[in-house]
Image (tube, rainbow, N blue to C red):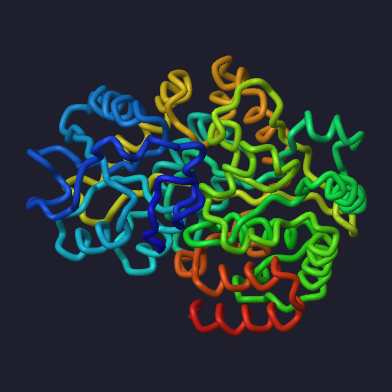
Length: 435
């Protein structure tokens, strides 16, 4: 897993920091170096990451402390964990048996630790959800994404999307309709370029994964992806090659800023703020990142690719349980409580990720965020995971996501170089990573 500065979205392999801005800097707890086991003073330890605005941690802590266990089961204590070096924090704690009983964390973390025997599978929790109807409250496909050959590695709780955005005022001034197909996108980019505007706003500099994620989204939009249905690396395909050749057309049309290969996420946000970018692929929190609430930044609908496919890219953030726990039943009871009651985080508008439960999506507090509500309505049904075309996630994704080969690939393609050797190089590099 990546351990890059988490203060900006897209910089670490959990996925799911949308529009955080200053959320992370506020003195988050702690390292995992303290003594003790997965219980703290007889309670379960719940480790959580800073998933939203500055007041997220206080709200999540209050939610945790509101847990009232049944007789004979332990309570729970809350501990915030910084994103910086989080993978080492968890790994060392698990190795020394000083880690949590339950935690949030990197989106692929549960699958990685499950392959090491450190995860307690969530089958009993999900079975109970099916019996009482809670399973029906999950958006389609989200529970299935957690299933491995040995069981459910975790329970999803929020989603992190990559979607197309546009600035309405710039398109209106240029007389450009919002694109719905790749051909319309290319024509719009040509018109915008004539006005000195970029139609494929992106960046692939230090710590900026939006460039590679944008290219991945284009592959998915053409029926491609990085993996085959069996989870094997499958990069050099006609679908991927066609998608990257289309990106080359965007580069030739001057839709891509030549400097974008060195853009950090901060650089890219500045370009959006300065109204140099008219369209681009970003997180669901672009309007939050830019500090805008006037509706000028809007989410497109999913584009229709050449073959008729529509697709988005989604990262499913989840809550996992660990084998080292003072009470497995206690861990399951707490996890069940947290999922059933986490709507308060969206009611207070403190969590940056998008809901995984239909009942939370329906909340007036969430529906008031029109762009995020549109993403759930239009992008969630067609979104694919980072593992596509594999239907399940696996531990090797943690090493692939945000990896150097992915970044180098993005820089090569966005610089306008031939995509075939770039795809071949990426195939070879990922095969060496994913064993």
